[in-house]
Length: 237
Image 1 (cartoon, rainbow, N blue to C red):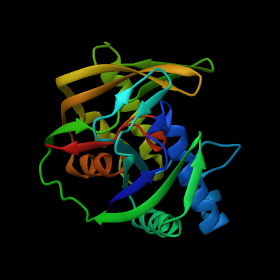
Image 2: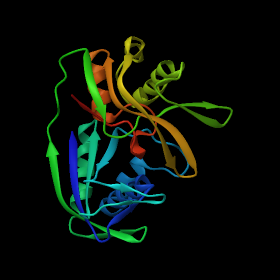
Image 3: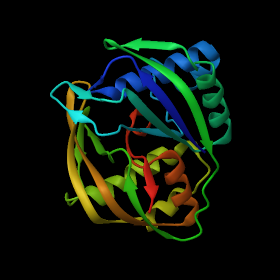
Image 4: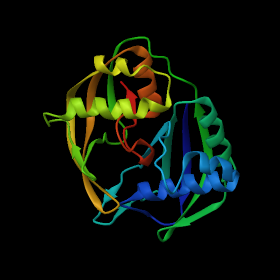
């Protein structure tokens, strides 16, 4: 399921690290709606794999060093969710925030509307996609993270490892990932500042092929690493 949240902004900018602000909004929404649901998805001790991803859309944004100028003071937040229970929890949590002021980073957001779109059927084993938020491919070696973009020799193999990791909360056979393939059509490498790191990511248009069940999950939950932090969401062209 996909949700589209439309916000009015008090000021004409967002922080360049807007993902942190979106994550704060999601956490606040869950905790105010039901503390148990917050604990279901967030834990200060352990990383919890989440079945969702998000991306924002801004009209004619102007990027500066530490902020993004938004002349019309509007933001569209798109959230894609892979399971029904989480979809209902998030929808209800967000619905409780409508018309409330969410203040953070010298700005305030007001959620005005929530639109819900039904599940999209995927009936082919190859699709052409365009990323709505950048794809993160990551390896973790000796307590350090390394990031890879589409033109790296290890990109495809490491992406498969990342996908297998995200499938751990599903019943989808990990063996399906062995048949996964990705081909860059009109790619772009993007360096994204995320917390204290600058991470290498990929965006643009790609063609992916896999079992239909796997493609469907990747469409719903996002693809790659750091999906619930606003990476790896795509649309089908």
